[in-house]
Amino acid sequence: MSTMTRMCTVMLAAGALLLSPPLAAQTIEDIAKALGAAQVETIEITGSGFFFALGQNVRPGVAWPRANLTRYTRIVDYNKGGISIDFTITQGENLPRGGGGRPFMGFQRRDSGGLSDQAWIMAYPAGTATQTGVAQAQHDLWTTPHGLVRAALADKAAMDGRTFTVTRAGRFKARAHVNAHNLIDKVESWLPNPVLGDMALVTEYGDYKAFGAAMVPTRIAQSAGGFPVLAMGITDVKVYAGGVTPPAAIQPAAINVQIDQAAPGVWFVHGGTHHSVVVEMKDHLILFEAPLGDARTNAVIDTVKRSLPAKPIRYAVNTHHHFDHSGGVRAVAAAGITIVTHAIHKPFFEAAYQNPHTFAPDALARSGKKATFMTLTDKRVFSDGARTFELHRLKDNLHNEGLIVGYLPKEKILMVADAFSPRAPIVKTPEQLNPFTTNLWDQIVALKLKVKTVLPIHGRMVKVEELKIEVGRTQ
Ligand SMILES: [Zn+2]
Image (cartoon, rainbow, N blue to C red; front, side, top):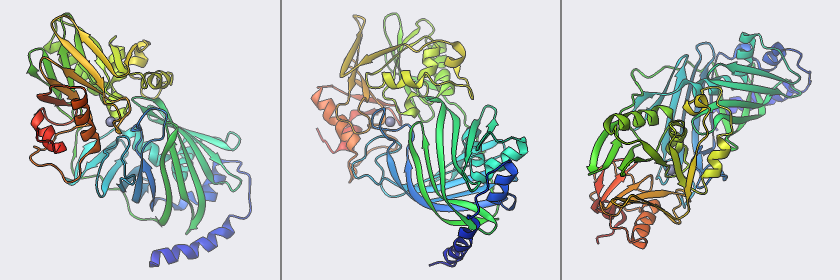
């Protein structure tokens, strides 16, 4: 047992006594007093449990995929408005289902933070920091129990029964629920999300214990978009642990869109983390993938319009509903483009698009338009007499049950998201085969697709030989 743990155990015994007299809170000050908020300027908590990848489920309507949260450390500096969240996960499930970087071996580190009006996300092993939206960091900071009371005191908020509300325009809204001991045991909050709009979160704080003068929950359970995202036990708490220091250099989140011809009438729209493809038909264009959100997809649409001004984009294919791949679907809908997706995804998008978008109204919310969908189950073919463009579902792919690939039979080009993402040159079959990629290869064989070139949504345009090496098939 470490000295720290022993010290906490002693404090826990003292803490139990503090809990006994229940007093109904009349004011925010009563809650601040019960939490010892005035004594908490900087706090560090460490724990472990489970982490779930939001928006990466194997099909709509089921839980986000779960990973083991092996270490989680959060530092909050209430005076400076700083937060740092640094944790490691392991895949946990032996047969990976869904996205969020699956499959992966060993430990994966996630590290992000915010200070006042800036926020960043770290990339490892390089250790580089990139700018990211501030809403999430500010939400995570001010929806902690001590953050909520501090924000409410600053706002001069009033109690509404056993709840009080904190709002930060354009960022989030949170309603705190106070228990009989004047401790916050539940927070309902709303945060902007490119797919879900004003996304609902519920955070439950349990097993409060005393650490010095502060009461701190030692159990946190959070859901977002209807399913758990975090379930954690806190094993270590340090009050006055030191502040949050932003990384020395934070790279701006620049949007880089490049368009290159892959074959006559076929354009690879790349740059950044998520690419798209444009297929030129007789009197219109088909866009394959509208990723990330309004900013990326609108930049893609603008580039396509500038480069190919003679024909309008009529259809946009969405490969699957994972949020990083479908975050730009609303932008294409706002541009009057019909969305083509698998039948299991349409009801999910339609339900999600009923949500209000009040924190960060996107192009579709501002336009007042409605998204128009066209669906497929196993196959759909676009043809204009000269060119044929096929869409196929990757049956039995564990990444997503409605995962769609594009195929141009004449050009022998395959377009694929997530089942194959060639980044570094592939010169050797990996020891551990990726089941999403072996399924892709099995489907190519079963569907008799004569692929020569692969245009991936992540990674480089490659010859099919690299895919064959990746799955250990020599012919
Ligand atoms: Zn995915």
